[in-house]
Figure 1: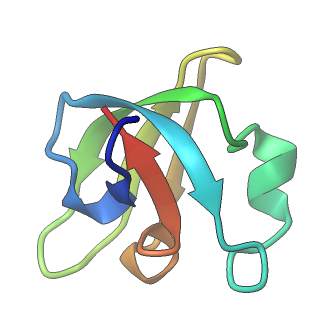
Figure 2: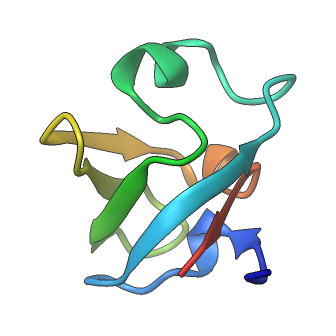
Length: 78
């Protein structure tokens, strides 16, 4: 089994699969945008000073930006 870690740990250009999301903390709008367990994502941008993280959702070809405070509640594996 692959090790899961927080999404905010990924570097720009890395591709990972979402394994789990703490739905008590992450807003439901993320699920509507396609951030679901089993989906492949790629980190496109990371703003400095704990700014937003740009994520490309592969299956829907969508680019979204999320806060680092929300990214720490999304667990992924490479």
